[in-house]
Every structure is written in structure tokens, then in C-alpha cells.
View 1 (tube, rainbow, N blue to C red):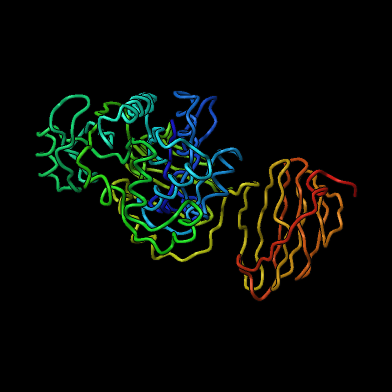
View 2: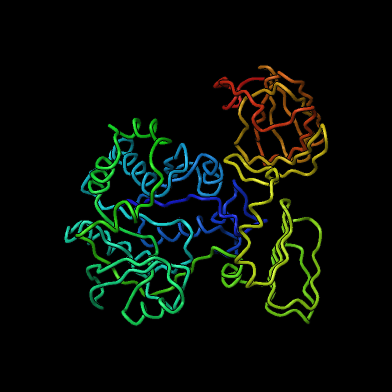
Length: 446
């Protein structure tokens, strides 16, 4: 069974923790096994393999998310990278071509398409196994997962089944309704459309070639930015005659807002937080290294990071997006495949950053045209390469690089570096990458 996890969008409704790089699915706010904190994507990835150890997962995502996915899921996860955002139909077609041409998956094999961020129990992924069997049987071209509603919601689209059987033909699709219409849908046995479906890989490829002009994965990748932005529901599902819905009744939450996310948090606080005894139904998440004290707060969410501070009534937190869209600010924290960085200070002509590298990882070998850099090693052991020359570094060592100097660093242990960037033009685009010598990665002779 092949599973394509769709990891797109910026997820800014969980600002200030989420930003254009660290979308909501990457926030480590959920309690995992052994008490460790995990993100939505880590939780879904773990749950899939707990239910179906032989499943093969491919994450479909944009370029900006590749590094953090590697950080959280490891280097072995398959990633299909979208060159541009073109909505779910092109993304799914590119992923299907990736499976066929890059991973050589047989075209008759069942494929499950699923969003990366639902909060669900294991029965949700047991349903995937049954849906894959339905796809393999071929009784319908497309099998959707219909979620049994727990209340009349205005936030979700609806699937109207022909009957109340566990597997039923689809009678109609309905867009997000008003409250009165939602109640009518529930009376007719309607199901929430959770964006999950199963089919054979061959079906996806046929739909892709039927609506887009390309030869194979590499050709579609090159032409991707010219494809029409269109959802899979509109391009395929709503036009398919041989379509059925699999009824699912179990734990399912969309953790897309602070209001819904806090309902699934194990405790009321994360980080340095003090709530006095008069606080009620208040959740606080603090990523800053300073304490937050709340007194007399009721039905509130407080979130603080290097990107900003949110103080909101829980109900009002659902309407955050238009306000966040007005904020134009550099990303202050990001997880990368090699570790993470945190912006500590920004001044005219300088920027100070804390860089943390995981053991065995390194930065690109690169140079900058418009800025100098000074590294101070705060913790750990590693090796720096400056214009091809290696030296070992440890706590207290200082490394200076003028503009044009080629440089990188390898972490032999967990390595923390304070990086000061100096220059009139400081930009993430100011980077030229170079090939590295093989012996550097293997810890060759100094």
C-alpha cells in the first residue's frame, strides 16, 4: 500500500509558532510515546507504520518544507518536491508520476491520498487498509473516506451517500454550508469530506495525462509551474461516476486553529509559564527563554515565539489569518535537515543567530558576496573548512570569514554556534554553493 501525505500550505493560523517555513503540521505540541513532544506530521507518520508496517509513505510538499521534513522524519522518507504551489490536483499528479517513474511502483497498486495533519486514532489508519482493498478490488474507480459528523459544521465540505451502508455510492458533493443547511445535510446522513481517498496508481496517471500534457515525472516537473491551479475534488472526484464512500466513525479532529489545537494538548502550558489559581480554560505555549505569567485569564490562548506574541480569546483565535497576513517579518526560527537556527538579534548592518547542528550533520559548503561572518562555538565539537583548509573547533573557539570565503562546519557532536553576520546587505539569497571534497564528510586527515 502506497500512501501520499499532502503537506502543503503555510498554516499561518497557528501564528506566531507557525511561519512560512514551519507550518502547523511541524509544531511539536502533541505528547507522543514516552512523554516526548511530537508534531502532527510525526504523529501521523508514526501511526501509519504502527498499523501497517509494510506501507510506503511519500510526502508531497514544497521546496521550503523539505529540510524540516528531513529533520523530523529522517533522511529515508520519500519526498516528492513541488517546484511551485499549484493546488492538490497537480500535486497529486506529480506524486503519482514520482511513484511510477522514480520508485517503479506497479500501476495496479493501491494508493491512499491523505492530508498530513489530522488528529486521529489508530482506527483511522485501519480504515486505510480496508480502503486499499476496495481500490484493489476495482468495484469503483475512487473510494473516499467519509467522516461521520459529530455536529453540524460550517467548516467542512459534505459527501451525500446514497444509503447508510458502510460502503455506499456517492450521490452528491456539497460545499461548505451555512449552519441551517448543515443541519439538513446531517438529517440526510451526510458525511464530512476529510480529503482522503483511495484508488489504483493507474487511475491517477490516467487522470493526470488526460488533463495535462506531459511525458513522465521529469517532464511534468519541468512544466509544473505552468499547470492550472485546481483542486483534486473539482478536477476529478466531483466528475467521477464510479465513486463510492467508506464510512468512518472514530476520533478525528482538524487542528487548524488555536481553539481546536488546545483541545488536544495534554496540559495547559508548554515552556516557562505560570498560571495563577484564577485562570480558567487558558492555554499558554511559550518558546521564549523568559517567563510568561497569566492571572485571571479565562477562555484564552497565549502563544509566544521569536516571530511574535499572540494573546487572544479562544473563539476569536479562529479569525487570525487576515491580521497575520499583514505582518511582514523575517522568519526567526526554523528547523532544517541538519538542525535548527534561531535569530537572536537584528540590527542595521548586523544579525545574530544561534545555529544548532545535530551530530554527523553539516552546512552546505558556501560563500557570501555581501557579508562577513563570525562564528563563536558555544557547545560541542566539530570541524570547520575555510577555503579548503580544515581545523577542529570546540567551546570558546572563534572563526572569522570575510565576504567571498568558502566555508562550512561539520558537527562531530551536537554543536551550538553563535553566528554574527556583518554587512550592509544581509539576505538569505546571498549564498553561493560549492561541491565538497569526499574526505571532509568522512573526517579525512586535517
